[in-house]
Length: 419
Image (cartoon, rainbow, N blue to C red; front, side):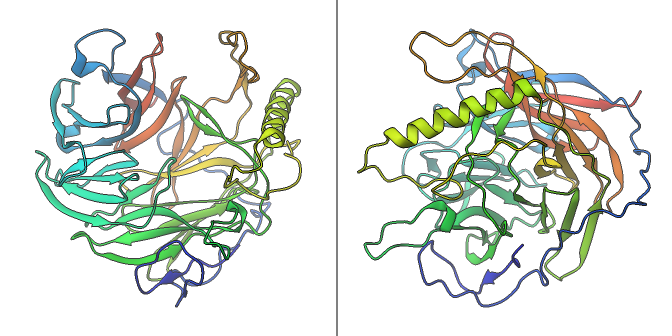
C-alpha cells in the first residue's frame, strides 16, 4: 500500500499536483495476524440485541413525516435526528422521539441553500455541517439553521461516507484526484487517486491527504441496496476518518487495520480471520451481474465517456472466498465499526418487471459489525436489522437508515442491549 501524503496548499483534481510531504508517516503494513493471537471476550457480551426506541418515516401520512430518499443521517443535540433527504432535497430535524421540528436551509443557490446532500454531520455543540456535492460547497449552520460559514471545496464526488467532521469542526471531504489527458478530459478512474480535502472550522481549505490505495486495482462494480453498497467481494484498501482526525485504513485481504494520528502514532487492530466461502447460489448471482455489466460495456456508444472503477479492461472476477471485511466506519465517540463479510442468506424478493434485464437479487449478507474502542478493545458484534445501514452510534445507541415493510424510507434509533 502507498503512504498517506498531503499537499501543503489547497488541491484541485488535475494533473501535475505537487505532493509535498507525508502527514501520517510510514507506509501501512498488511501483515497477516500472528497464529497465536488470543481471541478476547467482547466487553458488551455476546448475542447482543437491538431494542427499537424511535423511528421516523411513513408511506402515507403527514407530509413532514414522509421521507423521499434518505441519503444521510446525523445525530444532533439531545439525540435529535438530522435527516438529509436528497429527494427534495431538504435537511429535516426531528427531536429524539421523532417529532418534526424544522427544516434547515432550502433548495437554491444562495447563502445557506443547497442543490444536493452529499453529507451531513453534527458537532457536540449542535452545529450542523452540510456537504453540497453539486455546488461543491461546505456550509456550517447553527442548530437553528443560521449560516455560520461556507467554503468552496474542489470535489464533486457522489457516493457514501464522503464527509467526516472532527470534534473541533475540521471537515474532511472525499475526492478523486483525476489525471487529465492532453485534451483536458479525465482519464479512467483506475488512474485516479482517492484523497481527503481538509477544511478548517472557519471554512479555509487546509490541505489534501492522499488515501492509501491497493497495489493492484481489481475491476469491479457496485450494487446499491437498502443495506448499503455491495461489491463482488473485491480485495481493496478501505479507509475512513474519525472525529479525532485519525486516518483508519486497512487491506481487507486480512483482518489487520491501522489507526494513524497526525502525530504519527499508530494503533493497530489485528484479529484472527477465517475466510468465508462464496456459496454456489451466491456466486451464480454475482456472475449474472458481472455478465450484465459486461454486456452494458460492450453496447455503450463509442462517444460516451465513463470513469470506471478499477482497470478498464479484463473480466470481472468473482473470487472463491470473501475478504475479511466490507466497510470501515467510525462513530461519534471515535470507535471503529468493521462490517465483516459473513455467510449470505437467501431472501427472494419480488420478480423483476417484464422487460427489466437486470438479474434478480436473492442472496443478502446480514450487516454484521465488529465494534472496537479507541484503544482496540473489542466491544462486541452487532447485526443490523434487515434492510438498514449504519448511520451513527454513541454510547449504547445506534442510528440507522433503512426501508420499512411497505418500502418507505425510514430512520431509526436502537438501544444495544447485552443478554
